[in-house]
Image (cartoon, rainbow, N blue to C red; front, side):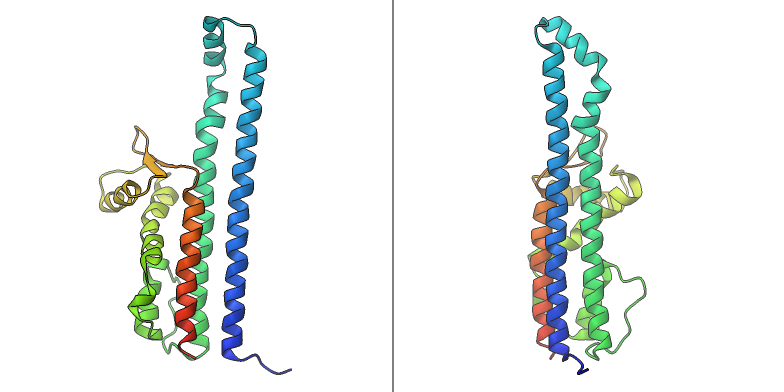
Length: 217
């Protein structure tokens, strides 16, 4: 069997990335839909149970079931969007690392990539060892790179920010996006629409890297 040409293999890598993007977008759509459906069902149940009650009785009913309300209104959205973010960030980080390994195995980057190739180190690797031009790392790349501060806060501190240097950087990132905020406890709130925007930026950033990789052949 004839071995595929390097540029053909790179094209396949790009196609696989497009599949990943589709998977991430669909994952977010389905989980958001499920969460919205659950909240709608709870709201309908409350409306049905409180039908005909006076204002005071409705207040007492809501107080009694407040934990259930908080679960579907606050806890589930926070946990779900944390999960969405961590999943898509992990996939993206893995695929950028896969590009580094692909270039090394194809002889376009002499130095073997680090075994633990994190997003923060891939740019240096691609510039220093694969000859990528810095122009390949545009605004969408910089956004996704800065998103690692959010990732670290969620993965290591359950989204709670303190006063250390990593938290300062995470706060700065949160302040620049309309779909991110902090609650009164200093905990990150990821609102609907953020992960969708992040996937679009990841798609753009990775497309630019793949285009730059083509210039090496």
